[in-house]
Length: 192
Image 1 (tube, helix red, strand yellow):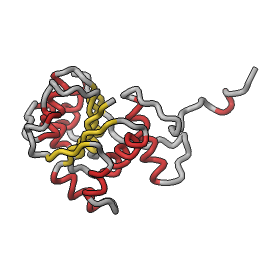
Image 2 (tube, rainbow, N blue to C red; image 1 turned 180 degrees about the vertical axis):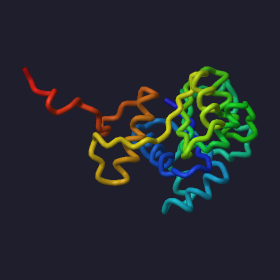
Image 3 (cartoon, rainbow, N blue to C red; image 1 turned 135 degrees about the vertical axis):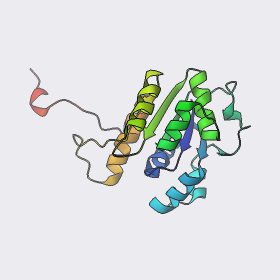
Image 4 (cartoon, helix red, strand yellow; image 1 turned 30 degrees about the horizontal axis):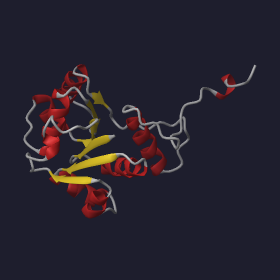
């Protein structure tokens, strides 16, 4: 399996980083594109360097390289995850702007009818954000704001991040045993 991972300048760079770590552990080939603002956000929000993050991927491309192999529909890939996805990138993807490698790759994923998941980051959402998300959702894009769950009793920030990453990977049929899953209400789980 091959997955393109795009990281844009919204807060939440840890989601893209953890996604790359989990995909590497699962033996899934990754193709990484980091926007300039994502690079700045990584340095602001985490202890990772850009080189640390790039080392997690099998292939790394410049966001300016519109001639990269992932910019073509002839390159065989299973899908793309943008984590985090800024509202600017969301709008560019919706409009088919394709002015950098993240948005061009997303455009190719759409035209090839492959799976695209956008881990959108913003709050509160205005009408433009909501309309862009609705439009893309109607095209089959998975709009995946990283909403924490609490039924799994997270004890650390890592638990919250992992839950979101595992749920995102579920959308690609990647089901990992470390994921904590809903098992029904305890009172309803008795053997009869």
